[in-house]
Every structure is written in C-alpha cells, then in structure tokens.
Length: 197
Image (cartoon, rainbow, N blue to C red; front, side, top):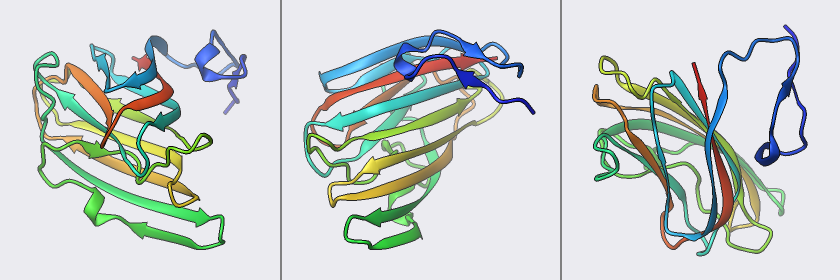
C-alpha cells in the first residue's frame, strides 16, 4: 500500500494529490466559508460517496453543538428520519479524561438535527475540525449510511474527540445537506465537499 501525500499545506488550497495509489474520481465539488452564517447548505448528486471536511468551525454563541440534517425535497424541508450512535473521548487542561457512549446525543428514528460535536466553545481560539462521509445518497434502494469524526476545543477547555455514525432511514434520494449550530450563527470556518465514484 502506497502513501498519498497532499501537495499543498492546507485542504482549503488543495489542488492535486501525489502518490501511486488510485483515488478513483475524487473531485472537489463545492466549498463554503462561513461568515456569521445561519446555516451552510450543499446540494447532493450522484456520487457514490461524499466526504465533507470541516476546517476550524467557530460558533458565534458559546456552548453550542455543530449539527446536520438532510433533505429529500431539494431543501424545502430538512427532516429526514435518522437512527444514529455517538461516543466521545476527552482530555481536559486540568488533566481529567473520559471515554464514553453518549446515549443522549444519538437519535432513534428521529427527524431532529444530528449532533456532530458536543459543546463547542466560542472563544477566539476555540473551534471544531473533522469530517463527515455520506454513502450513496442518490440510491433509491438502500438507506443512506454516514460516519463522522472530529475534534472540538470544548467550552470547558478540553479536547474532545467525537465519533458519530448512523443512517438516514429512507429509500428516497437525499438531495441536500444542511449544517447549523444548535443556537446562533456559524461565525467562521470552511466546509469542503468532495465527491467520489
């Protein structure tokens, strides 16, 4: 197995890959930079997999969660039924640590927004970075699986690594995805959407 090296120093400036491993047809489809944004929305298409990179997502409001939801009607409604699971590991500046399943952060056949992070701080140096993969959103046969990992500088001054996964329980094609904070605006940050076949 060969290694793949990003030729640029930051994902937001990514122009090419270097390495002998095949990447398939990974294409930068879209990107968005938040600036006191109520939400960031993307249109999904026919790629077999979409990978989103979240770069320094910073909330305007302290102690909020970064969340997402799907639409099957071109963005008119973001209320797709989801079943998910979530766990986290953290280590604080005061040297406290924990690893736990977070049952109050997952969904069971719910149309609510799915949390991607826990309580994100809005201090000038606090943010969230991570990724989300959505598998085959245009399928009219199967439910739509998704997986997210990331790290948060939490409002209680700790590093919190989050793991979330689940499925959108619909055989209708997912047409759109929306990212929001649980309260207030997305003050800053960039989201990149790649498509893979």
